[in-house]
Amino acid sequence: MAPFACITVEFDFESSHQLSRSDWSSEENNQVFGNCARLHGHSYRLLVTLRGEISPDHGMVANFRDVKRVTRRQVIDLLDHRHLNDVVNGLTTAENLCVWIARRLVPEFGDLLHRVELWETATACAWLDRDSLQAL
Image (tube, rainbow, N blue to C red):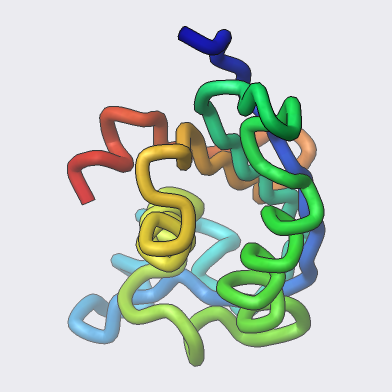
């Protein structure tokens, strides 16, 4: 059996969004979402991790070039310099964005997709691990 390894590719994108529920009053939105109830933006950092056997033929789990190409096409090109509320249905929290991103990547990477990690700020992130990804 070939050894297993994880590979991670990092991406950056800039987007705006607003956390607000139309069925709530302004006061309720402000109480729950604070400053995020107003239109604002982030410099997001996305980490996509694949885990699998290291191929004895080419010595890789997957080619970084392919991971970059697929993730740019399926995610980055759709979110970069966009208003997320126009692209993603529902509340555009970091958690929900991880789910949206994962749903676009699972069909491409299948069981190799091990983790989707999204940093909204330098100190705050959300991620989905392998168990969460399999539940999608």
